[in-house]
Length: 369
Image: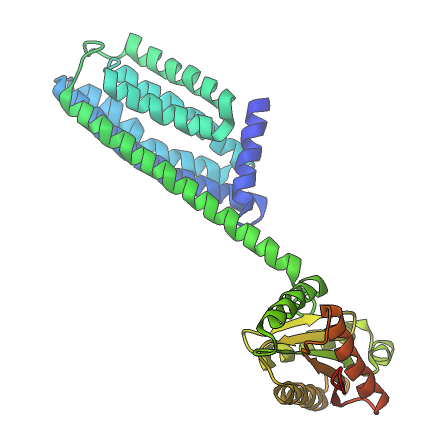
């Protein structure tokens, strides 16, 4: 049971990448298993037919081999779709796959190359699912299916060699190997998408949809270093934005409306900036925008458009209180020793905007001025 729990955990880890509820992902895993099982059974039937044809096997043996192989993929998927625990059910389906592979090897009386092909499929599937324990379990189950059919059913001469079946075995192993490689590739892609999603979540502020403070300051550091190297040739600007009287909005309208205001301003900022710009939420009611390769006049225009946009939208929508922004900005200067000096200059502009009556955009004076 420990091995089964381990395998179920592995399956759960894989299917969790799809981001669906447990029951749904279990059935989805069963659907993937159904497709793979169907392909493997078609290839196995082709292999078995080649052996039976070369061995001039009786007609009834064809039915004994082909009928179960044709029905099993559909029966296995039906079991998963009806199971209360799809993961565990699919695990038992994989156990049955191992028995069926041994069953096929027994029917062809341990024809050497075909048996090796079926054993290869069994070992790869079980070891990939449950590690070394799966490897041992696969050999036991395969041997069980093989011994039952070899001792009590198969009339074929044992341990014979069949040229056509050998070719079919090579095709089966190559096809199965490609199938497993594609499954592995898909698993890697799912995990990569999951990592990308987590990475994005770690740098984005959930409420505003903008970058969080940590990521934004990191971008500011990089831009500061780049500007120092370029020596003003492509200097940018920083905007610091504050929502005027935001505490009063929260106290009067409630925090849910305050959250909607934050979200709306985030949307408006996103609509105003270029792909190369870096907008972020700097604090509770503060935002920041990094504008690379932007002159002071261009930055003032961006700030003014944003201020007017927020004021206009909130005045025309009854779901929002009237919202105004105070915006301070500063251009990059070679006199700045650290990125914090650049940020402090923009903060001085914001202080001037607030002390000048709010709802305005003001640039801080140059460091040398």
